[in-house]
Amino acid sequence: GKHTVNLDNKTADVTVKPFTLEMGIKFELHVTISGNKINVSEVPELPIPDDWMRDKLELNFYKSEQGGGGEVENVNYDKQSRTAVITFLKPG
Image 1 (tube, rainbow, N blue to C red):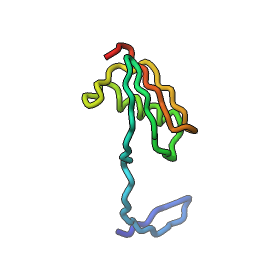
Image 2: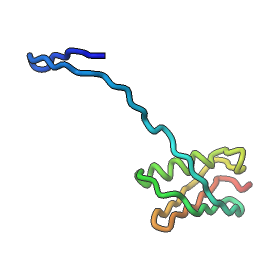
Image 3: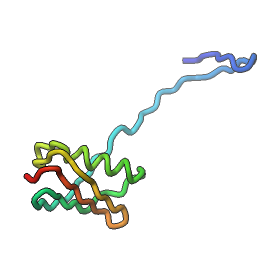
Image 4: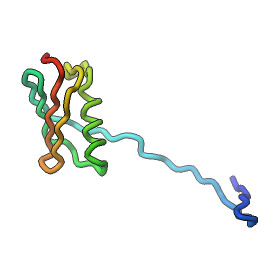
């Protein structure tokens, strides 16, 4: 609806309009599993900072039932080659 807002002793009439936020991004990862490391390739290019991508990768593999994950020790992400190496604290 319409609202009147007071700003610095002046009034402004505003109208509220709903909009939809894009909440999530789905993507597919290709992995090679070896001991306590997973090599990830074809990481999608997303308009987010590198540290956010590292966090997303870590969360995806932290105790992941589908990938047999566990506690993540390190995430080495290379944006240019679109690859990452996830290192776990324990092999398995």
